[in-house]
Length: 358
Image (cartoon, one colour):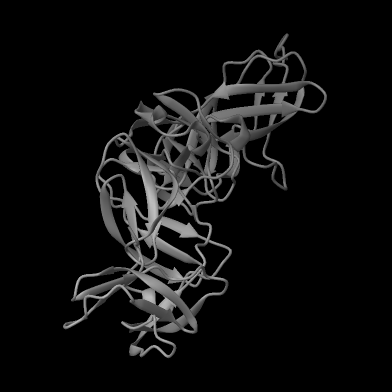
């Protein structure tokens, strides 16, 4: 059966010499019921809008043509969807793009998408793209697109998945705009999507670099450049839609150190030291590093007191000298503060020995 245009009217003669004319091309009708005539359009060589008319005496030398309806002829373009999966509840936009022009003027309201057996309206968003909202569904379904609401082209499959749940993030904070902090997220339902498409969402921003799915319950993601603030961390199983249950992440400005008190400590260790400066407003598990040129470094647990104070205990060292002090607010080595000018230093010295008082 033809899927060409259906021309409707009344009083059509029930004859077999029925034809349609598309512009200057004439084709035989495949159906004539007296009120409906259907014709298959000629194969398109160019995209164009043509006038369609019908004749009931195509056997004559000079047929009589009636009507002049406009009809859009187009080549079926190749389309590529931006996602191949989405949440089972549906409603997350799929964008289909093409190298060819898609915005056919006469078909603006006729375009449709079909997910499995469910048809939804397509919307042209540009000359070379259109969007559809997938309906709710389960499992894997075929995806088809039609520009005239009748003839569909098969594109690909679409996989539905249950929403993932992010229950915690470690560390629970990272430096704003640094793009060096890597966090590990924990939760459930991460493997429902395609591993290569997995991303972490930070508020409305989806990460793009070093997003690694480890298993169904954990993944590692490098933070994108973010402004300071609190962000809901979610999982995007299709590479774009970060949805589902979230955990919170604190993004903060890089710590600024101002001074260290006391300015020195014995090499035997054990001295309580206070580091003053501008730190985070909440405790994220800071670490302090003492570094002496050519002698390596010491990484120590710090104690967050408030957003201006961190304390730590000086370690035992074998080499005397001035040790450069650095701090990381979230315990990650990649987030240590840069060495400042002037340097914040802790002098490590030998305890003096008093032999007598004269």
